[in-house]
Image 1 (cartoon, rainbow, N blue to C red):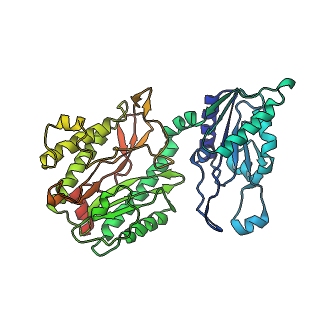
Image 2: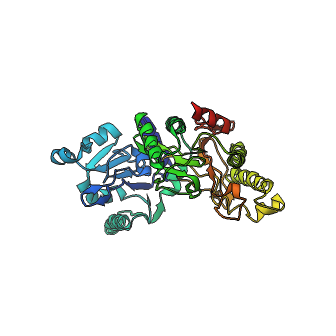
Image 3: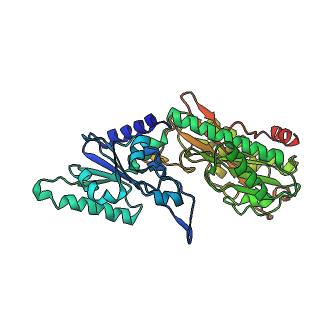
Length: 434
């Protein structure tokens, strides 16, 4: 993202909070994994969205119409000794030069300078209730201003969760964000194709997991958006299976739910394919049913449609197909109303996608399903998960199938960002033969 893109985002938020407001956001902090080892650092998405600043232990103050500049950043100062051990820091100077801060101060000055920025503002926006320590610290700054009210100071009397504005802004992706998400989707799609070509009976689930990560890293996406799911056979029926520890058996399907993160943006793809390269007749029957449900759902993903329209379309197709296969019996409309499909399809058909794999944004507005708009990105991912017992006909037992794509809502309809990886069963078999 360019500095102009970050500036545009801050200006939009500043306009939303108004000249009497101030927004305060903390960066993510490093987290200890065990003893002297930290988890790999990943910046808080809201902070990254507004600043592009990649380091922990920082604070942003956005102060609309401030004479000396709206964007004030507090961060760790340069420290050659610590940088020798832990890596380079941008420091105060770098925060101005690289991130476009109007002012930057060392973190040690935070408690002194923040009350000065808050004074004169009537509304304070920050992530309320997320971190008790932050809540106490913010109130400490506000109380410092309140202590001077008899001297004419003005302190905020309204506190607002900044999420209410910022997450609405993040929900609609700019042209630059869409470009990054296309690249992330393309990298992940190529990695999924690689797994289809490599897969063979006797391999381990973990081999495919590591091959996926390697393929993404080769293309510049070092980090994944979430832990990969590689479930062979009945493991594909476990929605969040992450052990990835079993061998892949001849005659089974393997379900792979994996996506890279690129420049802070997630991709999210699921494909299910035969370990030996050929669908058995029962596997193909279920697979084609899930594919029909997914295509029906994608057809409903267009501007003006309600958020739930893709889910409703998928559920109807799945229920009708389950009746045809003898797994359910009764009238389709009544079965849908009674949610008779839920033993076999127990999750929703999608979620928002962006900087977080389950991205921000509400799904209902004033009690009604939100209407889809250009710039929104969602996943479309119906599935079927057959119990391994006599509640279903024997040929279908223990089969888990999910097909997931990333879909951008456009002015005229939608764009499937992840179309580079095949999902038609004949195309999958052809790719695996190669």
